Image 1 (cartoon, helix red, strand yellow):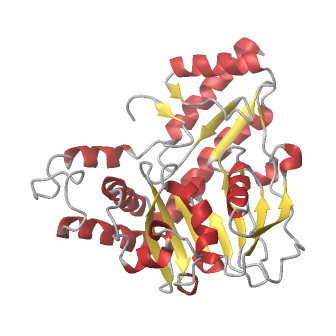
Image 2 (tube, rainbow, N blue to C red):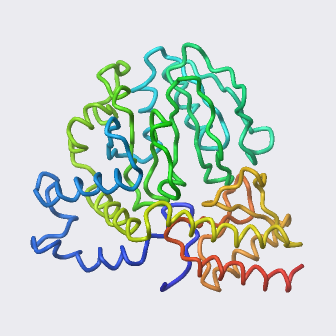
Image 3 (cartoon, one colour):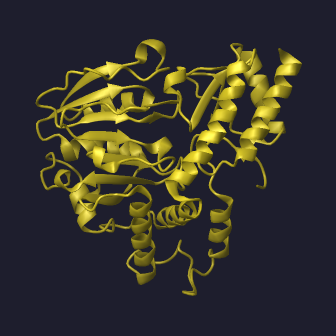
Length: 360
């Protein structure tokens, strides 16, 4: 690892091996004499890149054959609108609000139909995942929506809600490819890639084929129409080619790490190291409820805003970058995505120990 340990929530750290390969291929991709940045998206070279990326993603996640994979533009936020546009046939949807991102998605969906908030943890600044047992799913709901890992507050669903046969739509942006998941339990899985997979600019939508139809809301723009983009192999218009290329390199890197089971074991080890320190610390305290903690995003505070600011400033001097927490939570946040080596978490914990001795 060179440079700093980058704990940014996104855009975020990428595997060093991937960056080195991209650098080596920058001027001449596989002998074609061009960079991926300048080749046509209609070229056979790029067709190979996007085909390989989809095939590797399908292999990593065990995506069933009856699911479409679409590389969409605009990140996850564009899908806040695309989801109701493509799915709200009855113009009714149920949302579980566990944090800022599910809250924003629900507000966006209200522009297109009736949104029922089944449960929310807003009462405690989204520090926990709301109880989902016994939820009254709306009989006419087109889907049930969750954000499975809330980046800002560091909470995650360890158990999926029972949607009583309604399609479950899940934003997995900040936990994408961090652990195995059974795609068949979802109607739609989607996420922006800039947290755990690649550079900003792409959202990957994995949708069951019966939900990818021509029955979209009137006024749905072509760029947000899942069926049009799926039928065109994500090439209806020029996609963010270089971002998709980097995503493809990350997929191959993940396969070399032992797939999602291998990376999940590493992720749990990193998270345990940090949480174990937080739980015994007399200065630092995690802000998420223990049973709902994320293994990707770990917010923590000292309880003193001035001390938090001092920690962030001194951490930067020790090669620990982008550790400042989101303004809605305060304090610090360590995003320990797939590409963060355990040495980075060890360096963070070591600095926390030193800071606590000097400031407690």
